[in-house]
Length: 456
Image (tube, rainbow, N blue to C red; front, side):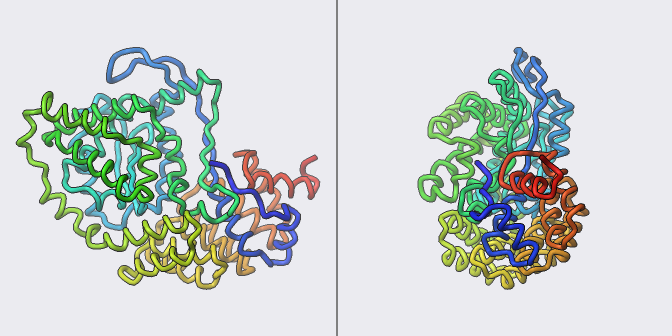
């Protein structure tokens, strides 16, 4: 995915409007999209021994680097997916399933962690050292704990086979050392903000595994779950959910398929193993009752989650009125749902309804003050309302909650420029260019620095 280009009249036109505090709808939405860009570099290591097979594999990260990637990037990706759900019991439950699987994996010393995210799309992913996210969109589709264990086990399989590290090793072979992680895309300036493809953000680094890697993660996940006392059929149930769901509603499952390619062949392999190698697990308890009890709070708002899914799909298709109707339906059911408020604010922002959008962003901030995305959105909305000082305050709050987002560096520069503070704005643009020199935000930053005489 590529970052959106700046507004058509270029950096100078945007600069003039910043100076006069007259940003257009396209300007403010572009700023939000541009600020969602991030970059990551992979240090390349060489050969290692596979913890799973004992064979030599080509890797691009040491175990210490895998852990560093998790520590640096996982908090930002989880925030892109609107943070962990505000239900400690649900998060403890999913963490408990992870802990039940952990004694049966090869890399028991990795810092595994898991949480349910407010994202509405259907997916799960892991960072290289085991920081895992499971979306609420998939949690409400699962049928029992065995299917959840299969999902988490599959992600743990990627960690234990060091698939992310191997993919960086293959990048070494291809002489590619930098992976660009770009959330915003397309020339529309707003569609990717909640587009299904764009939501996965940094999980582009984590996903897009080869089919062989996916098959290996399936096999490992099924092995782990059976060793932990679950029926192997749980992996079959998970594949059935995904394959059949994709046939019925492909748009709602597109993200899961883009990062974890599914096929009837993989489902059939899981079924064959369940009937042969793991036949003895057939009588194991899938823990459906415990799953239903532990996820009751999520399942109660399934209509809200489904309406948000539909709204996001409509946004991706540029069907803004339909999207607004879906988000309104979600909010009618659950007025204080963080994700629904953020998405409604983005939808209204895309339609130029900045003041209305701000109200929903403020509600999102109030109901989940520990989550940062509503702060970034509120900042761009305040820029649109000719309040660069207020935008800067929002970005300061963002930094206190989630430091290290390069997009916030850029937006702070924009805010300071709008306040007439050229030198500090230039410092922020320069700092952003030290992070990345690609994309529309970098182009704008360089243009302003040249215009001010800081760059030749």
